[in-house]
Length: 163
Image (tube, rainbow, N blue to C red; front, side, top):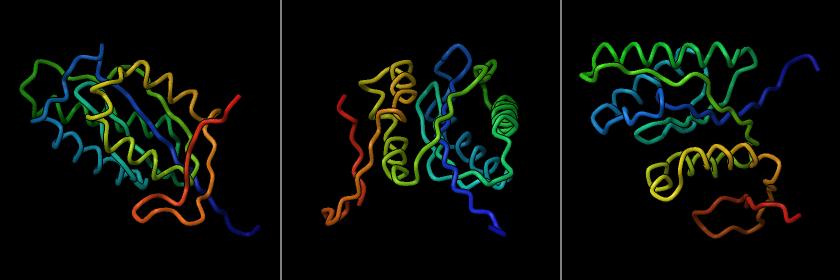
C-alpha cells in the first residue's frame, strides 16, 4: 500500500485532583472551549466532549502522528494553567494520569451519546464504577449492523456478549 489509512478513535477520561468538585457550571463553558481549542491545535478531530463537576470525557479521532502521552500532557497542563489564571478558586489541578480506551468506528455514535449525557448518567453512577465498566467494555462489546433501523437510531446495535 503506497498510502496510509488510519482510523483511531479514543475515548479518554481524566479527573480533577483528589476528585474535588472544581468544574462548576460557571467554569464549564470556559474549560470546554479551551479544551476544544487545545485539541484543534493538536490537529485531532473532536467528536464529543462532556463530563461533570470532577471529571472530563473526550472522544477523538487521532491522526497517525499522535503521541497520546504528549497530547494528554499538553491538554491537561495548558487547560489547568488557563483555569488558574482566570478562575477565582484557590487552585485547580488535574489528577495524575487518565483512562484511554480504543473505540471501534462502529460504536462511535454510542460513545458520543454516552459522553453527551454525562450529567444524567452520573446521577446514578459513580466515576470509579464508570472507569471499571469502560475498562471491561472492549472485551464484552459486540456490534451488530441493523439492516432497517428505526428512524433516528443508529444502524449499529451494541450489546454485551453472553458468556
